[in-house]
Amino acid sequence: MTSRKLLLALCLAVGYTSPASAILIGTSDMPRMQARAQNPALSRHIEGLQALEKNDLAVAEQAFRDSMNLDATAPQPLLGLADLALRKKNTAEAWAWLEKALKLAPQNALVHQAIG
Image (cartoon, rainbow, N blue to C red; front, side):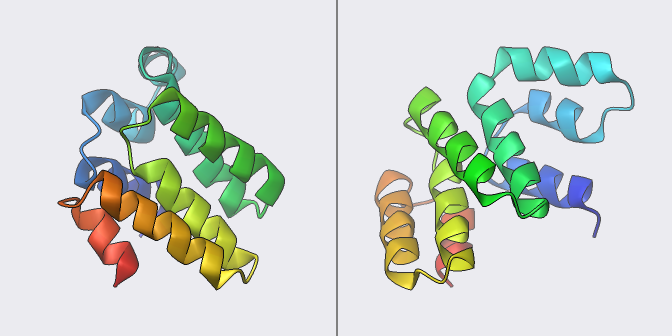
């Protein structure tokens, strides 16, 4: 599965609306820029995912924290921070982020999938 398809599946699974789809599967830069401008939290979250793909952990962490601060109701940045903690081999911190995500969004399928 390509990273774009994975990101699209992620956004659809967690309830991001059609602007996310435009970011992920759009063929021109204009729809992407418009969608990101409409949802800065989503934009920062996607930047965090892209930084993780490049193994740029410092940039990823800042992007996820920015996303979390921009939308305190979204569990996605918490899942990103959990992934980041696992990459740093800090399982206690990863579990803490997962527990926060579960408390924030107890019915979210992606949160439950991340927990296993």
